Length: 66
Image (cartoon, rainbow, N blue to C red; front, side):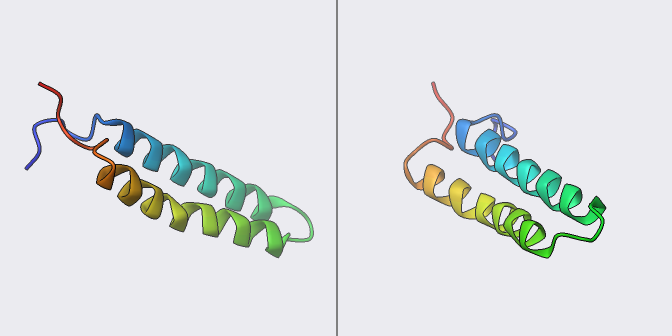
Protein backbone atom coordinates (compact mmCIF):
# COMPACT_ATOMS: atom_id res chain seq x y z
CA UNK A 1 0.00 0.00 0.00
CA UNK A 2 1.15 3.49 -0.76
CA UNK A 3 2.46 5.71 2.02
CA UNK A 4 1.00 8.85 0.44
CA UNK A 5 -2.64 7.91 1.24
CA UNK A 6 -3.80 9.36 -2.07
CA UNK A 7 -2.30 12.81 -1.51
CA UNK A 8 -0.92 13.11 -5.03
CA UNK A 9 -1.80 15.39 -7.94
CA UNK A 10 -3.21 12.43 -9.88
CA UNK A 11 -5.52 11.41 -7.03
CA UNK A 12 -6.72 14.94 -6.32
CA UNK A 13 -7.40 15.63 -9.99
CA UNK A 14 -9.26 12.34 -10.44
CA UNK A 15 -11.46 13.01 -7.42
CA UNK A 16 -12.11 16.62 -8.50
CA UNK A 17 -13.18 15.65 -12.02
CA UNK A 18 -15.36 12.86 -10.63
CA UNK A 19 -17.01 15.25 -8.17
CA UNK A 20 -17.68 17.72 -10.99
CA UNK A 21 -19.35 14.93 -12.96
CA UNK A 22 -21.58 13.98 -10.03
CA UNK A 23 -22.57 17.62 -9.48
CA UNK A 24 -23.42 18.14 -13.16
CA UNK A 25 -25.40 14.88 -13.24
CA UNK A 26 -27.23 15.77 -10.03
CA UNK A 27 -28.18 19.20 -11.32
CA UNK A 28 -29.45 17.64 -14.56
CA UNK A 29 -31.70 15.30 -12.58
CA UNK A 30 -33.17 18.18 -10.55
CA UNK A 31 -34.24 20.18 -13.61
CA UNK A 32 -37.85 20.02 -14.71
CA UNK A 33 -38.09 18.24 -17.10
CA UNK A 34 -35.00 16.11 -16.48
CA UNK A 35 -32.23 17.11 -18.87
CA UNK A 36 -30.88 13.76 -20.09
CA UNK A 37 -28.12 15.15 -22.37
CA UNK A 38 -26.69 17.11 -19.44
CA UNK A 39 -27.00 14.02 -17.24
CA UNK A 40 -24.98 12.01 -19.76
CA UNK A 41 -22.32 14.74 -19.79
CA UNK A 42 -22.06 14.38 -16.03
CA UNK A 43 -21.91 10.61 -16.36
CA UNK A 44 -19.12 10.89 -18.93
CA UNK A 45 -17.18 13.26 -16.68
CA UNK A 46 -17.50 10.91 -13.71
CA UNK A 47 -16.37 7.92 -15.78
CA UNK A 48 -13.63 9.92 -17.49
CA UNK A 49 -12.13 10.82 -14.12
CA UNK A 50 -10.69 7.32 -13.89
CA UNK A 51 -9.01 7.74 -17.27
CA UNK A 52 -7.60 11.11 -16.17
CA UNK A 53 -6.21 9.45 -13.06
CA UNK A 54 -4.63 6.61 -15.04
CA UNK A 55 -2.96 8.98 -17.52
CA UNK A 56 -1.60 11.18 -14.73
CA UNK A 57 -0.37 8.14 -12.81
CA UNK A 58 1.48 6.90 -15.91
CA UNK A 59 3.07 10.35 -16.16
CA UNK A 60 4.51 9.81 -12.68
CA UNK A 61 2.19 12.12 -10.80
CA UNK A 62 1.01 9.38 -8.44
CA UNK A 63 4.36 8.68 -6.83
CA UNK A 64 5.65 9.66 -3.45
CA UNK A 65 8.27 12.40 -3.47
CA UNK A 66 11.37 11.88 -1.34
